[in-house]
Image (cartoon, rainbow, N blue to C red):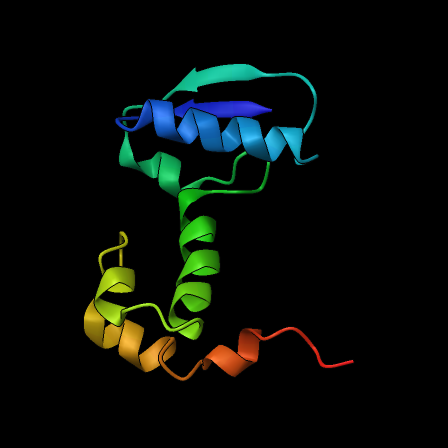
Length: 99
């Protein structure tokens, strides 16, 4: 697993460790320090990047009735974009299936 460390190194390293423990990536851990912004565009060994996490979390938050302004505070989001893309989700979309 490759741990990419940036300005938020402690948080991101923790996320990568959890992803590794969950079975993403390899058992080998290497630390790579990157100070450039291009690191956000590169896929990590785990296949989980901040961009992927953001796009996984935003519809869940919006769909479960989270305030859209809270979702919009996530990086690379704006309230008009959140309303256009994620507001169409409803809490019922995330309800457990009826048996």
